[in-house]
Length: 170
Length: 417
Image (cartoon, rainbow over all chains, first blue to last red; front, side, top):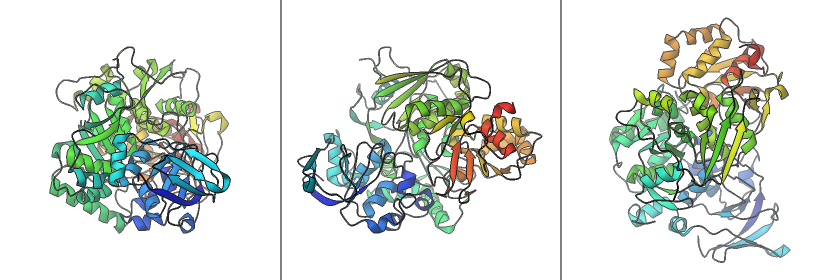
C-alpha cells in the first residue's frame, strides 16, 4: 500500500465500533462468501450502510475501532464492501492484526477534524491525510517495518506464497 | 533486564530476550479454532498452498458456536471442518463437547508457560493458568497451522492488584465487571494484564478463569495470573510432568499499576450496550427481564451451575421469563447431573440446552424478541450480540441471574443467599 494515493468520501463513525456491529454473528457463521457478508456491513447500527459506500470510500472512526471478537470477517466485510482504508485514533489489537493479515489498509491518526461526507486524500508514502477543501493536513502514524512487509505483500496469504513461510527474520 | 510474565514467555518461544514493543516470530505450543473461525482458516490454509499441518498434536478444532447447527448453511461449514480434521489428524471436539476454552483446559492442552493462540477472542482465558494465550484471526491461525509460528508484538504490561475481602453475594464476575468499569473498554488495548493480589489467591481456579476471560473486554492481549498451590492442584490430573511456572521479575516494567479494593463493592451489572457500562446492582434493580441465560466460557462451569442451583433449588422461575442454561462442557454437564444440580435447575423451570456457546453469540438456542431485556452470565452485551439488535443485554454473575430468574426482574442475589 506504500506509494498509493487514496482518495474518497468519508463515512464517519464513533468510538468502540465493535466487530458485532461491523458484521453480526448471525451472518458470519453462515458463509465463507465475503461479497455476501459485505452486504450486511454495519447494518445493525447503520441500516443500508453497504448501499451508501462507493469504491474507495473511507471509514473514519474514533478510539478502539474493531473491538470485540476475533472474527476476521470484520475487516473482510469492510474490504469487500469497497472501503479503501479505515482511519481511526486507535484500533483493537485483533482487528489490527486481522486487517494487516487480509490486506485492508488501516491508518492511525487523530480523526477529530474529519467529518461525514468530507472528501479526503491519503498519501501513504508521505504519511499524511489532507482535506483540500478545508486546508487540513494530518499526519499518519507509520507502521513498524516488519508489519509493512506483510502489508506490502498484500496480506499474509501473499506473504506466505512469496516467502514460502516465515523468513528467517521478519 | 527485568521481565514481565509476557516478556518471559515470549522470550522462551523465540530464543532471544525480548522487550516490550519488539516484533517477533514465536513458536506456538497449542492452537485452536472454532466453527465461526475454523472454516475460514481452512480456506486460507489452502490458499497459502499448504498441504499438511505442522503438528497433529498441537491443533484442536471445536464445534461450539452453533452446536447443534440451526440450518444447513452452518452444518455445511461443520462438515468442511470434519473433512479437514479427518485429512489432517488434528484434535477435534464435535457437537456436544462444549466450549473450546473450557474443554481445552479440562483436557490438559494448556499449561503454565505455554504460548497458545486461538481463533477466538476469549482465548485469553488460559492466562489464569499462567499461559500466554491470545486471540488471533483465521489467517493468523492458518499461518500457525502451516508453520507452528506466529508474528507477535511483545505487549507492554499493566498490573491489576485486587485487594480486600470478597463481600457476600459478590463473585469473580462482579470483581471483573467492577474492574471493567474502572479500566474501560480500551483501557488496556494491546497490553498484557497481570492480575495479582489476595483476592486472586482466595479465588478458585474456575473463578479465576472468569476474570482472565474478560481481559479482552478491556482490549488486552491476555490476562495472566501466577501459579499457586490451587493451580497445581487443578492441573494435577490434567497435565503430565513437571509444571514450570513463570513469575515476573521484581523490577519488571509496567505501564500502569492499578489497585482496587473490592471489600465494599456490591453485585455488579454491565448495562446495554457496552461491557464497561457497569453499575452497582442497586442502580438497576427492578428492571424487568424476559430471558435469563447461564453459561458461556465466562460462567458456564460447574461452580457457576452450583451457585445458580443453590439459589433456584426449591423455587420457581418466574412465568414471565425463560431461563436457559448451557453447561460449558460435556464434563460440566455430567458432573452437574451426578451432583443432582441439573435436576434442581430443571425442577425450578430452567431449560438446559446442549453444551456449547448457546445463545451467547446469537446464532441459535434462544434469540430474544424485539424490545426484550436479557440478563446473562456472558462476557459481551453489544447491541445485536444475541442475534437481535433490538434486544437489551445485561451482564451479571450466575447468582444475580438466578435470583433475577425467580423474580422476573433484575434482583440482588444477596436476598437469596
